Length: 188
Image 1 (cartoon, helix red, strand yellow):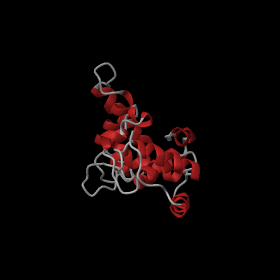
Image 2: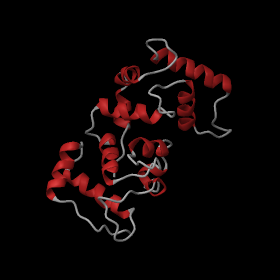
Image 3: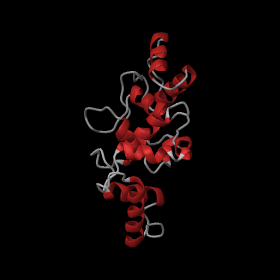
């Protein structure tokens, strides 16, 4: 597959380790996996990988939020959701076992905020439920079931009763669910 034309220097490796929740071994493995997504002789430290290629990774292929994950972690100025190696490291760091609950919940909130407006409103929650249950005729909730579920979510989560869930409300709910933090991971 794509042989990387670049290696990570010891200095850069140490810097990545300081800036992420990843070990040196995990960073080197991430570099190898990222390099495999590149064409031959592309520089892994300067080349962006298109979202379509990133989504071929087995760890993301079956994740119902795979496109949102790329969107949230992409720093592409082209708004094409491509990932640089550093974006890829940020993604892996946030999903690692070593990431703090605050980091995990922050990124989960951003992934679930489908319209990127800083709140989870009824539309975001409906998207979220459809991603989790599958949006097929067999798995889709009836309109009544969806309305009731969203009502229950807001009743439990919307502390200030403004009809949306903000980051601090989301983090409050997540803090009472330790299983969420342990299940929010991607392992290469």
